[in-house]
Image (cartoon, rainbow, N blue to C red):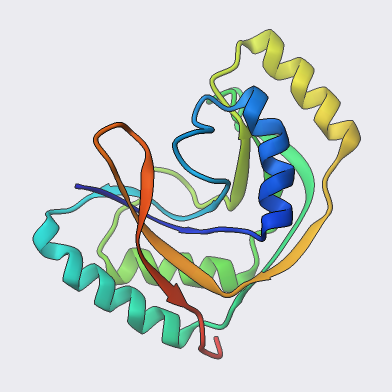
Length: 170
């Protein structure tokens, strides 16, 4: 089964991201706007209990996540994905590192906290949209007090398996 660990921003931020995602993100209907804390990974369903126990332990260790996003960026030329760049704080980095260590996950990509607002665009559309959105900008500052273990359904959409409230000090 395919799993992922994410943090969902506030409704206000999700509404802002969805304003763009409806038009520019081919995955709009598959998952709400989110910050990927641990990229998707395969695990046997028998390991779900271990994953949940690990997340429960980390949620008791880490404080609510402070996020800030003040610009629009892109992963081009690797991929034509456009996103709200979330500042990579020490806390976010520590949480990601704890997840990768505790779940013995070997990430394929460098951890780049973000909220995707567009993907799978042609080069021309990507350049036009990115230019427009960089002029408009973004200004998001908020606290996220929970993280979610998601799993992927057969139709490609993602749903929440369990939610963990961050109550720690780190």
